[in-house]
Length: 211
Image (tube, rainbow, N blue to C red; front, side, top):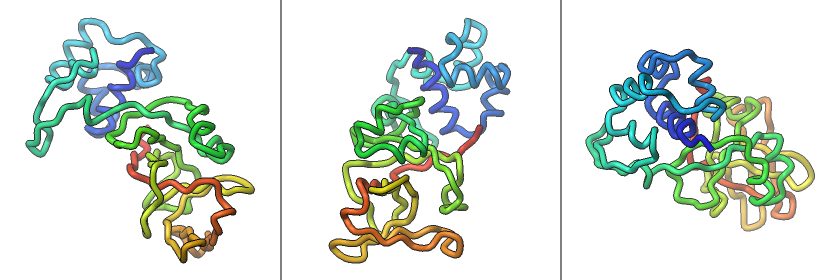
């Protein structure tokens, strides 16, 4: 597996826009996307030189997976490979078909990096505008299957009968949860008993759609 593309995508997402990466490395958008998708081999010597000029010590992690200590933008010292690890990305449609974590992870389409400490962390690509503008269609949300959401926290819930929804979580009582849209005039609140959903996992991290 070409892990170079996965690591490069993670850092581009952290640093900002795709356009900046294209300008700094000197490649076309198509080449960059192929690296992200692991559809092209890693760069040759000329592009490696530009990567090192742009990224400094971080380039060694991108190119070789080597862990190096370096200052973060706020001056803290971080160790990249301890902060970031790959997790599966799954479509919203496949999330609606999965009764548990194992079934969901089996539908992995690609990967992204996260700092989540949950060993079962998984990302889902959002569909629909029920949480707009807080969470937009195409955004990726990292879920934490190891715990229940807190009141007011975004969550993704697999309904027992059909489909999956993303809403704000609120516990009504010991047996009932209320799921609240950011657009309540279009999407009424959903009240669910424990036997009406299979899982309800909090959103731990949001990655905006950039391309």
